[in-house]
Amino acid sequence: MAELLTKFPRRRTVLLASLLAVGMTATACSAPGEDRSSTQKSDAAVKTELGTDPITLEMYAETGFPLAKALADEFSKQHSNVKFNIREDQFTVIVENAPRVMASDNSPDIIRLPTMVDLVKDDLLKNLDPYFTAYGWDKFPASQLMQLRVGENTRGTGSLYGMGLGYSVTGVFYNKKLAGQIGMTQPPATVAEFEELLAKAKTGGVQPIMQFNKNTAGINFPHQALQNQFGDPTQVADWIFQKPGATFDTPAALKATQTIQKWAQAGYFTKDANALDYAGMVGEFQKGNGLFMFNGDWESANLDKSMPGNVGFFLFPTESPGGKHVAMSAPNTFGVSAKAKNPDAAAYFLNWVHTNAKAREISVTVGGSSPGGPSDLPVPSAAPNTVLAETLKASQQLGAENGAVDFTANATGGIFAAAITPEMQKLIAGQQTPEGYVKAVQAEYQKELSR
Image (tube, rainbow, N blue to C red; front, top):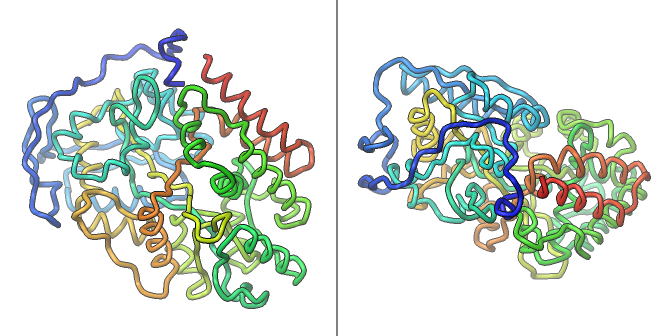
């Protein structure tokens, strides 16, 4: 909706005070590899020293993802004057609640962001540019923070409004034992080879894909994986970032939807996919009831514990041999509420997450994701022969191929709940056509942008 700010009246849910102005002077950076969270000096407008006064940080996080709490616990262990009060909800609930919660007098200090553009437009998110300058976040790779910027005309540029608690990559987990049963000796190199494996699994009595589609459209994972390969991924990114003229109704999206329909009709998804939620999917995969599972690296540590030595991971293959990989990859985005009672402490925590050695280790071992942060800080290593080691390697490969694309579910505040999820459920149930699907998603997108 960002590109239409000058064309349509701004839809307000609340009138709030203006965000902090930009213009801080940078502080000196520490030596490479040093924990920079405790070396910053106070700035004229923002405080980068935590102090010793008792603080309670209110956090609103996503149920089922233990990284936020693990980081909060470690932070309190290192800084005994800081406690966290953590509220957790499912992602779909956060989508609905975030604007209201952030507009209230009890707004959280730190919140898992389901989307950014509308929250920025309604002045509900704090502009982090002053902290960017004060903490020296310009030492982070620019591409790492690009998805967290919102400008006047588009997302992906402009001021910084969020930070990542881990920087995730998605791909395909596979059961090694079942792979051996159907003769899979290495990950597929092309989409065609992947489809051959699906057919072999089905013929051999193995469930090809274990994928959830209840509450939120988990089948959007394979859909976007295909969409990224069937066309120019820049077009997908432009649509997500709301660039003028971008559309979802493209030949690549249509071909991806036709492929998903074909897979559903062939029985590559479970018959009850629309009744299977995320936890159910992971549970079934852990029981050995599926060859493949489209998911993100946040499940790596969990799978290493529940299925030691029996899980592999690969980036979704390219359409043509030797092509560059493209994958949904995004930060586990958190922001600071514009009405936060402790914004400086919240920003201190977000900086600590990226720069403290123990915090970075937790991001890898608990979150299963790259910790991000300054490029001169090492990424903690994972134990050899683990799926965590494979996902970290895949993340590095994706970075080298410059193939990261945000999730289409993040295009607008309501697109996932209002269009992608219900229309994908209809498609899987045989109640929607591929042509109808892409047009329905684009229609909802245009509807939201015109508000």
